[in-house]
Length: 284
Image 1 (cartoon, rainbow, N blue to C red):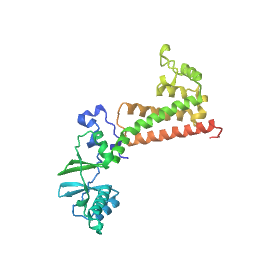
Image 2: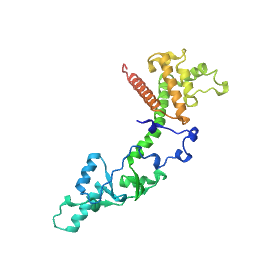
Image 3: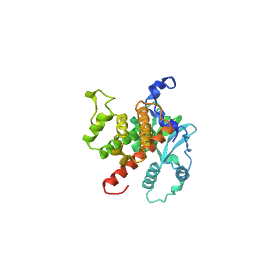
Image 4: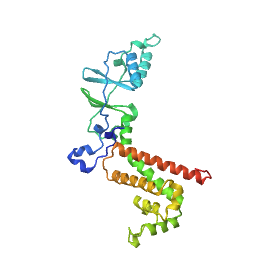
């Protein structure tokens, strides 16, 4: 995954990007490396189908020079075949003679400045939206482009959510609510005024979780859940916390950050599976 795909813009980036680039519009969805392939109207539909299969496309823009006439797609071809058969009656038709210009569906054009959610219904119905104008094609937007973009934006938040929720679950697995309150009293007393001391997980911060779990006085309660040494566990959790804080403050997420986050999430998943297996009587 490229770093650009993982970039989360911060308001501190205002010197590098225009303000409007902070909004999620179509120009941010188009792949940088996209090359738009068009075919001429006189091309045989059979040849266009071969091209689509070779490149794993579901449609192709049909153009004369720079003027886009419409889209050739599997759907447009099947509809043309049905229409040709209905018009010709019992006359045998050689489908290999059909040209793409005889199998066109109307092309709809979005502007690069459009909000992409405006085009959801069209993408759902047609599987693609052309970007630009009929005489100035700038790109093709597909549902997968939208999905990949949304995933790149949302995935760090999803991973952090999984990590934090599973960490809470593991803490609950290790100690009762009463014991947790006692641990908080011991480990967090210097961090809070007595009347503000958190007693439940929902009231605590990620940093509070680390303080409680990695406190030498409490580690025996958590050692069987997190395995390894207390020092290594603290280091792992602190790294997760730093990434969490950066993501929620909309700092830039690098490829290395993302990979560390994904590895941390996988570690939490393994710890969760092991805890569940032990609870069921296993020896994990």
